[in-house]
Length: 341
Image 1 (cartoon, one colour):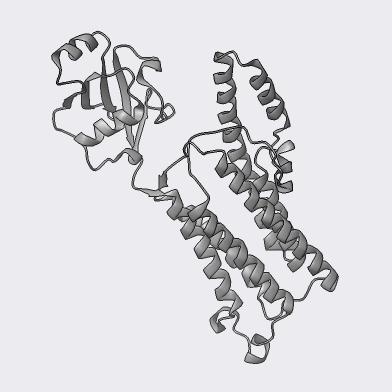
Image 2 (cartoon, one colour; image 1 turned 30 degrees about the vertical axis):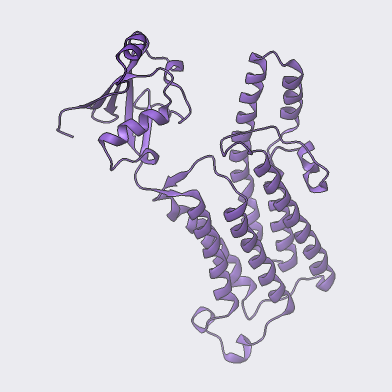
C-alpha cells in the first residue's frame, strides 16, 4: 500500500484515433475505501467502459484482487456498482473517483449449492443408517424401521438429488460468486436442518403418523406434485435467460399446468418448495420439517424482489422505446406478482 499509485493508459496505438477521443476520454482514480489512499490512476479510459472493464484494468495492477473480489463504489459507504454499469452514465465528471473494497476470497455459486445439497443428503443418510454413536440404544430397537421412515428417506434423498441435477444442468446464476466465509453460514443452515429432522424421523422410538396410511399416501402424492412443479418452474425460469445469466424477461404461463402459478406469483418455485416441505411434514408428522418450510418465504421474498426489480427495468426500457402495450402488460404482471407467504 505504501507504493506510488500506478498509472495505465486505456487508449494507445493509433495517434489519429487517440486525438479524436482525447476530448471524450475519462480518467479514473481508484482509492482505498478505508484509508482513502490512491491505489491506481487509469488514464484515457473510454467513456463507454463498464465497471467490469475497470475491474479488469485494476486487476492488471493487483493480480491478487481478481474481479470477483473487487467492490467498486462512488462513495466509501455507498452501494457497490454493478458490472454492467457504464462510466459515462454515472454521476461523475471527466475524472471519476471510485472506492475499492476487497470482498475477500470468493467461491462460485455452483460449488456452493453442490456443497450445501450434497452435505444435506449425506447427513440425512447417516441418521437413516442409525449409527450406534447417534442413538446409543440396544440392537433390537436399532433394527426396527417403519415403512414411513423408509419413504421419508426416499423423498428427502430424491429432493436433494433433484437439486444437485438442477444445479449442474439447469440453474444459471446472475451473481458468479459469494464470499468464501459465507459458506459456513449457508452450510450450517442446510446441514443443521437436515440433521435436526433426520434425528427425529429416524429415531428408533419414532411413532407413525396419527391417521396412518391415508395420511402418508395423501402427503406423498402432494409431495411428488410439488417437486414436479418446482422442477418445471426452474426449467421455465432458465429458459427466460436464453441470452445469458443476467438477462431477465417477463415470465408467462405455458401449456405446462405447473407454470399456471405465474398468473399469481412471479417465483412459484418457492410456492412449490413450501408445498413440498409441508407435505413432508404431514407425511412424517415431524415439527423440524415444518420449521424448515417456514424459513423458505424469507429466502423467496428476497429473490422475488430482485426478479421484480429486473422486470421493472424491462418496463423502463420499453417506455424509452415508446412501447406502451408492453409496459401495460408488465404493470398487470407486477400487480399479480405477490411475495409468497
